[in-house]
Length: 448
Image (cartoon, rainbow, N blue to C red; front, side):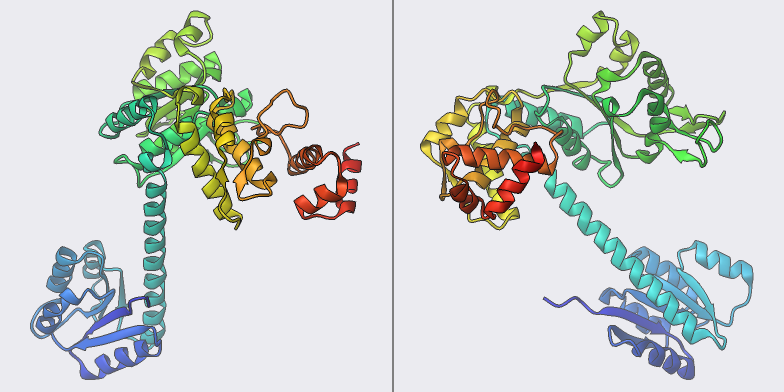
């Protein structure tokens, strides 16, 4: 399907100027030009939704000001370029305030200015459409019933709680074991809420050194400490109007917990090195793999902050408690991995299904994803067999879900697992992996 033409309407009562503008704009074959000599005819065609209107300020029947107001009322997406001999600065400023994109005087450089302005508007429209498309794609991706898969009662209960979170700005506390999908739930809440068009900002509290976390959250002024060579905007400012997701909140140090409590109570913060408070309007979603109430009893988490965060609790069940969701997720990961890697779709054998159902998945959904991707890689048939599912964590050759492995470490483990499956026959392993025998020798030698 071809892209719809870029429409420009020229509204100009002077025949000479009308022809000049139409000729100038027609030099670009991508533009569809239509001209009018009075305001009435133009307004009768406004329903054709032009992208740009060049508008003479002084028309014989209706003033440019009246037409500009009508355009803003009926189709605010239309960009208006005012063209006139009008030199009154106050009038020009007023027109720009009312929504005109630009004002161009009838002078010698009108052609260059007009083409540059139209080009800028078109680029801006294209960027807006691209951003709008990306937002729709993101929102679709995080439509929680499509991104958080499962049919078990436990996961349906999570669906119900997410639904309740969407209508308000209540703080959400997501708890659950590592790998259960806490960030996925946080994104689903944000991208399905009223704040979906604003930023979703993630801070992993445990991953940031304690001496940097305050600057990360609140920002700092230039010169506020050694190395502060410029002003930095913190995550609270980035998330203004949107959602701030604080992952692993239980790892936050007590002194920073006190500062976070104040921000949540006062809805303002102060950058390091500044005395000027900055207002903040962001929704707070936090996640933890620990029981915060227990952490309060142990003295690791402030009781007042605990109660301040005590909004809507969502507890994610471990995968081992989700029954047939294991197979639903496994099939999803197989399909996605095969599609991304241009591999013919594989399926799980009956015995493979039983093996997955009997495995406790200490690494939860994240581990299942890793196991399935490796199984697809190792499988030599259309069906994934039990031996392709490397789930024995005690096996030194197993590949388990981890964030610490490098690509080369994955290569070594895959080679070792393939060799083991093929009785250490290097030639056969090379054929299965579609690599040279010398490559296997070289990679294994580099490991030593």
